[in-house]
Image (tube, rainbow, N blue to C red; front, side, top):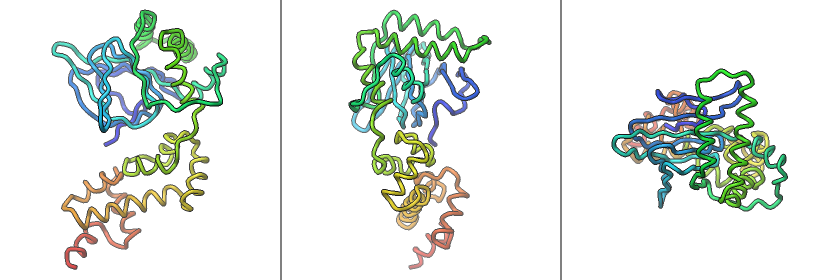
Length: 287
């Protein structure tokens, strides 16, 4: 199951600050560690207050601990926590949309026409002013304040200004500019990398840095086929290979191929191949 931040339902000890249209921040408190794959639906800045946050990649793991902040671009990450004995994992997460970052950079004359690519995430130590900001921001959770949306928008601007006034200004600026003004990612790379993740066309468009309309147009131009049809065909073809060459359950194969809704998988499999997954497997066994 692929969890989605920050739109997923909060856990027991989580609190969220949000307006009617967007989430601003999340406070997370966990007593036990767990590992999960999450789709970060908006660019996220994470202050680690206690414990350690781990980002797992194929060949390495990056760690942020108390006194660090981690900036993550929108994307899919495998994450876990390390919780020393006697403490809890505690973190503050703040969310930034593309539009917010572009407007911020335009407002402060920080635009560029040559944004260099940067890694998917950035980890830097906090400063005294950033730690002070973190503690002040936590006070807004659970409060009812008139004009809170406007206040929180200004607080996010304050945070970015503090980062750009700190010792890692150039790293932070390059990171923000790559988000706001970088070239859209290659469609073939995005689609093939995430083909078997349960992502919608809308989510793939967002990952590629395109509007839904632009993504559909560019996809059609590249593959000569609408994205939903092409993606389903690829997933179903892989599912059929697994059905005919493994003993995995139909539900397990569906999930492995990016279908979280098992009845939907069975229905479109039958539409594509004229038989149900179990019947298709049986026919292969007879042959």
